[in-house]
Amino acid sequence: MAWYWPIVLGLASIWGLAFALSAMWAYEVPFWGILLGYLFFAYAYRSLFRILSGKPKEPAARHPAYDWPASGPIGRFGNIWIVFTFYPTALLSAINPFQLSQQLRQVIGQVRAAWRIKRAGTDPANYQTKVSYHLPFKGEWLVCNGGLTEATSHSWGVLAQRYAYDFFKADDEYRRHRGRGTKLTDYYCYGEDILAAADGTVVKVFDGVRDAPLVGYGFADFLCRHFGGNHVIIKHADGEYGFYAHLIPSSICVQEGQQVKQGQAIGQCGHSGHSSEPHLHFHLQDTPSIFSSMGLPIRFCGVQSGDSNIAAENSEQPQAITRGMRVCRVARKWRL
Image (cartoon, rainbow, N blue to C red; front, side, top):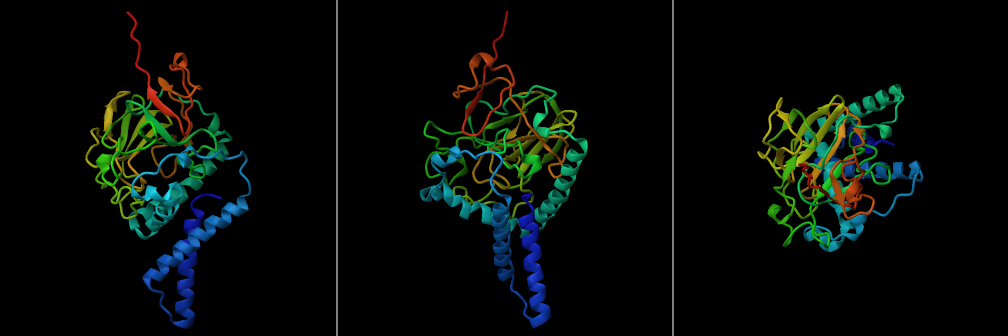
């Protein structure tokens, strides 16, 4: 069952209940009652769909993040506590007219994308990119979410983000920040340059979204203007668009229509939009629209990792990366 149905059915259920109470017993449900009712119905539908979906096609491996220290003061309660902070506040985005309209556009767009892929009769999992892609940052970063299979996917049910990645910077003990983690500058990746993964043309720049407040407590900024925060979309090839999200406001240094080169800085890593902590969200999609596109699997060239699956001598070949890996760009060797 698609990710958006709990939201749609949750809204329909609480408004239907509120209308029935008003029509039959002249009882006007207060706003806080509608809000709590929506959260209850949305969570109930989400749980029901999980039960009805049965077992996944492949066993889901334990996510490496369960063994990493959680960030900020909320981390004192363990990684599981984010379930009680991020997801409920993300559901509250339905009361934000900007994000509600985005959710509705995504509901319609993802249905259209699913039908488009079905009519084409091709499996996006087998897609081979037309150009070579490199990691969109310098130095070593940690793959927190993402992979090429359902078990490792960032968001399998969200077609546009099926093959997306979340990247952090972390120390040897997998801590992502210094100090308490309540300041944006505590986080190692905050302010780091984000680079174009390949040559291309900038087709979309969205700026002016604040960095999410209360960093370190795992809240989603349900009051911001866009769930992706400040972001850049670059056309790297026909049918291949890179989506770079959660950038620092006013840090984007490219403009729509501008030609960019692989490795060129386009902005800085931030905490805008639906971001549990400062990080880079990156994925490849087949149209310029985040709402109606299909995500595309991506493999990176010039990658080196401590993981034995990527040997240094094979770094120039496109390599698959997955959550839990530490990855960095391999310095190019110049031949005389």
